[in-house]
Length: 474
View 1 (cartoon, rainbow, N blue to C red):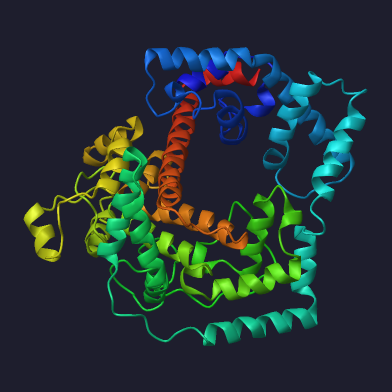
View 2 (view 1 turned 180 degrees about the vertical axis):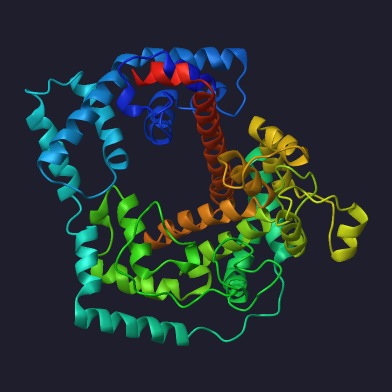
């Protein structure tokens, strides 16, 4: 909220702002956090709640960069104009241009639309020609060519048939919990030896592979569908596909091979470092038919650890959601009333005799942060309010529903990050790296919820105040 209030006092930054006047999420992610606020160097500006000194420092840093931010917005407008002239449709402009615009603003200042048009064109050509043929158009041509499409479909069928038939009966949840707690504590205490030993043991035991294999066979409990990774009882064989839209992507295990490669290309700012399109597609076929839809064992272990962590996240209910209690909580979340069913603690435990009320250190670290969020407190009141009449598709009701099953948005976002690392062959080899990744996903989900709540409340405010709506429109 501090950042939002400071941002709204700036003028000339509309191209970097959302409809409500606050900074776009990509503005925060790509410009403000890494280039202006720099929370690692300025820890007073980090965290969901700022002290008075932290709020002052944040405001000071934003105002000190006001001229550069205005120039960044102007360069972004100019690059989009030239982009249209050059008929470039590749990639998301904000992802590709925000940081380059900040660089241009820092080195050249405010652009002149006439004199700096050549510089804008040179920047665009540098960005897009650096893709070295790794474009979504090239991808579409590759998978839609008739003979090649038949060959690729045959590869998918072969890879799917060759999946291992059974998973190991060994349960690695205890070792994964040990890894999570050791990794989390290492970030606080600086001693990562225990976490390193636990990570190495799990990788050597192929714990991530066995966890992923079980998702192909488990239709209840912490199944792939319950974890939010597929809409089907069991993950289906991937299709080849020939189209994709970032706003309508399927769940991770339901995505076509085309969608998986498409998202990699869209998210990459240095595509020349990726394999050529034919190799990207062939590798993705093997990956999509592998446990957890990942090839690297360390990333599979990270996914398995993330599942153990995520099913213990409880931003609203203070009790942990152990993996064997997922089905119980799902029944509560799907209650026809749309509210939390009044179920006694004894009844819940009786339904699952393995339930424990002990949070792990890793779960406590994230739950304590999440439960302090203002929107979580509001969602709790909303769920317990028997007079609430919010429609199920109301943005606030949707977020409240997600808070009842927090592992789903968490694991979907975690899988996307692990998939991107897998494509680039960037495994996870140290416990602090694993914890930074898992904790970062939680922060990302919290920030996403916070932004959606802010936007929903702004929309409701405008809907209730026609005079305000008219003044904004003018």
